[in-house]
Image (cartoon, rainbow, N blue to C red; front, side):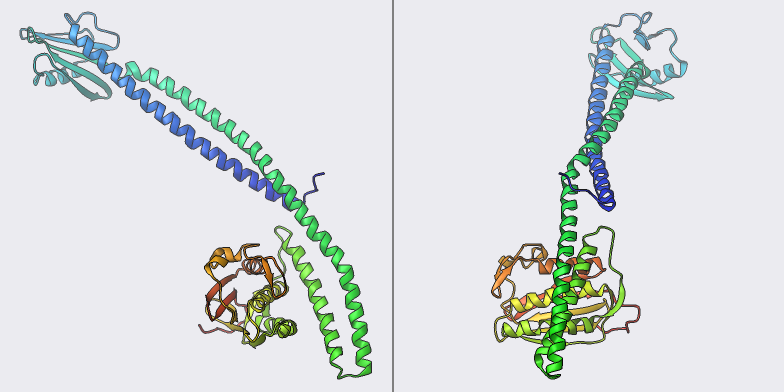
Length: 415
């Protein structure tokens, strides 16, 4: 059964279908115009050749000028006397006389074009036996009328073809994006269902952690287990926020509220959350926070930073260091995550593939790794008007930089 689609998905699919139809129609239009243009050019060239052949053949057999072909005239100069076909325009006669002043060699024919409001094509020939000069003139209107009718028919055919191509393109576009619509609906439903199903156990887990924390606090306020329990409560609350953020990200046209937030404090919170995990992997976490007020969705920014820190920990050997620096700069607010790992080799996707999903799957830090963290972090950054870039990589480590727009209350930063 096809899953139901939201109004936003329907708008997205309609837009995609229209774009597909536009592209298909444009391609058909280009091909159609090319075919029509080539056909017209070949037709005009062939027509011109036929007219020239007809004029040359006529000039070869002219003996008198009393009965020329339709829409044409003949001029015959014999023994110094010139005979003209009836109805020859006087101005055209003068132009023909100018051409006769330089007749071709005997036995040869010369083609001339005369423009006098209307175009005329002239063949001037000198007979080889008596030296007579023969001129045959034809008006372009004799063949342009047929040409115009053919071109009009070709243009109408092209317009009909383009209309049919647009309709067919729209239908094919809707058909082509239908599987995409089904996939989008399934994705949205999965995210919504997963978030809903996870929220209940998270609530129960948070309640139990709060109960444990209160019991430990009653037993002893300095018991470190109480701090751990409070940390579990905070992490569960952040996980619930992340689920809300995922729901927003999965809804087209909807974005979380952009506010001014201190990325330095968010980085401190991320480092505190990841410190135990880093210690378990034998990695030291170092934070250098600075004034870093950015315009962002705080929960989304925290997810991106956590993904970067987790990625750095996973690629740093035991005894290494992961350093997180937050500062304001000319481009915006920058958080740099440095590690002391072996670097990213060319085979591992040191280019743009590094930020593609599943580009670096495998096992890392004792757990399955799917290559999603960097891709998600970059999407979070781009949705908030920022960027995620690979600043450097080498045998001494790798640095990723998350850049977000500076907040309205942020002080001017240095470079």
